[in-house]
Amino acid sequence: MKNASTDTAGLVGLTRDEMISCHGGLVFWAAVGAGVCISAFTEIIADWDNFKAGLSGACKR
Image (tube, rainbow, N blue to C red; front, side, top):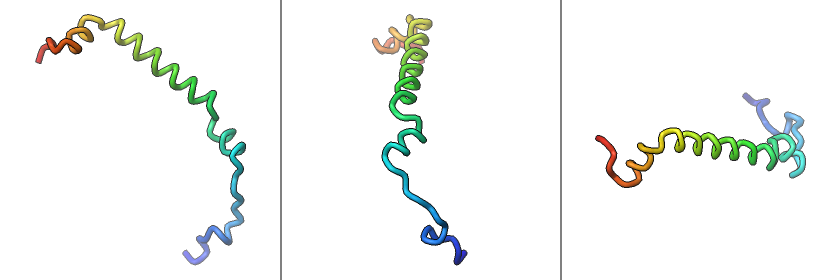
């Protein structure tokens, strides 16, 4: 493992813009967040009675 150094591997650092483009940036994470919120909201509406009972503390144990 003598050759496993980052100095000899020929690696180059990324700029901020390159990191954002590689990781998807804000648009990607905004779309993921919106999808999570929509699916959570849909599940709450589909099971409203149990959701309401859980908030009031009257859920079955």
